[in-house]
Length: 414
Image: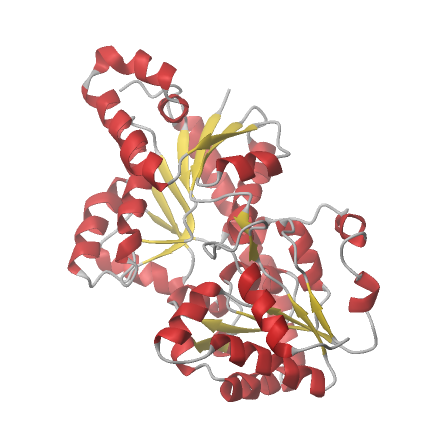
């Protein structure tokens, strides 16, 4: 039996993480029919409730459990061989890791300057595998730049120990090359491999007014982000006012607007991996309008992609909402905060349709949206031309993982 451990993704909350996780399970299941998966989960109860995969086990691994418990036990597993069987019996996480053929790290952006507060988590996610001698495969993600001394030291210390790092674009690849990494593969985000199941319309029918989204007015999707909200407000801006103002302008210009949280956790007002409270605030600020539609629910990654595919245009600050809109061939305007947006748009020759958070105002974004509408035929042509190649680059990592599994030793004796 093939055993694969996954960290850095989830079924709940951030649906980009769900798209990466489900893409891995589906594509690797096709290549390794006996594969069983273990997700080291930050939200184990919610992930377990949403889990429909019979070959996926959910194991608790919130930041404290991972950073202290799992990492400590993994170190003891390495340095105290007589205790290994006992440690494995008492810890599901260590048992899964020690017997895994590979650990898949699906962190979307890791080891990057400006995100030093996440650096410990980036290290803690892969360190247990090093201690159990389990190969580590970093699925397509952004890394770098590496100018900060702490990040540069950690990156030079740990990243060369990874078996394979799939870079998510040319900018990340340049950062990796500059660090001297030789274990990279130029790929594309795993979520490009996500396929619709075909039942999305029927599963949404009772919850979303699909007929209302298919009226005479063209539909514009808006997917906000609490991450960008914090960045805009840190420089004195008002992200909610900006997004609400954009929506009102779109309605006045003859569009319908769909406010779509691509990262959502129902039953809580906490904003980590949760854009629902932000979206509610934006919709309230827009005011009552029959031309504004709001998805106030946690949908699956496939349901979200289906709804995005109904849009004529899309404006987003969520990375994987952008991946879904590009995958569905929808002209997209991105308000971003990292090179991770630009390098993906570069694959489609559409990098000009990214606006940095520092330059984002209601007026500047509205002007760029107008330019996107004018350039629609050209943008759609670029999407149609490049999407097959990008999907192939995404899918290639499934082949690389399967090859690594076939060559790795089962059980990983330490």
